[in-house]
Length: 377
Image 1 (cartoon, rainbow, N blue to C red):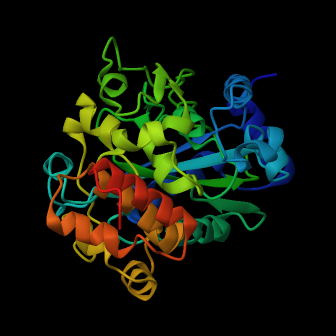
Image 2: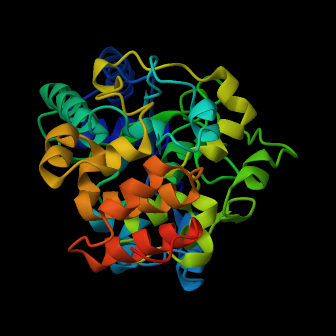
Image 3: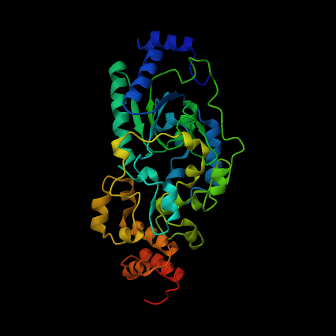
């Protein structure tokens, strides 16, 4: 039996269960999605057998580190109909996020006294922005198909969004394991709507049964540029070495051997994307919500390290950065200060936190002071 229904099967289902014209509805969904600010919309079936095998192998290698949630849902991550019973199709959507007014990322990375924050986190929390748009799209679909059951996702549940987006013809998986598009590079967010409607998958009406061709070729720039060599081979990422994992997902002590490699990156890492030639074609975001807030694209490490918890919460409310909490924020900046050029200002900032109430912060501050050959307080 085919992975998705043929035109004849769709016609049969329409006659037997609904008067909805699913091909017409699919076209409307794509138009509505673009009107809501998404740059691309696609539809896929739910077959992820090959992706499931790769996921299980990745988990078996322990590459997920302390991200236990990656394993706890079992096959539900790769079987949408088990996660949300009745799911027949997944609508995948893409939204550009690179803030147009951000200071050049490479310039910030080259300045060891400045804090580098991943470009996706400089504005408002994307989970809230995308979820609101996805819900609005679902409401439009329900107006056409009152038997709709759905659930929206924005990197918030066990969803294999890269694999689903590939099936929906939104791009291909690059060697850095992120989705790539010839027209938009990789500076975009993905969102999904699981639906119980037998919509024709993208490519079906055009009689194209294969996903977009992989255009990475022999390029290995993303692999070669990774500061911690977290991309162990093409399409394989050891999250335990990834700076995004170390600064965001890891809640405890950052491995000592990896701290010098983190440089001034205090929240996430964009190096593999900055090195990717396809991002020459990326578009800046037109969303006001993704514009830089509080000057976080170009700010001194010492300034951020001086924020108390109240300031941290006030300045970063509504941001993805807020999710890591003040303690982890200080831990990350302490590492960056340990990697910064030594100066009286850097040493004073570190010493101001040397007796912090948190053992985690104290440990990383002590390491940073030792990096600058300051052993006593």
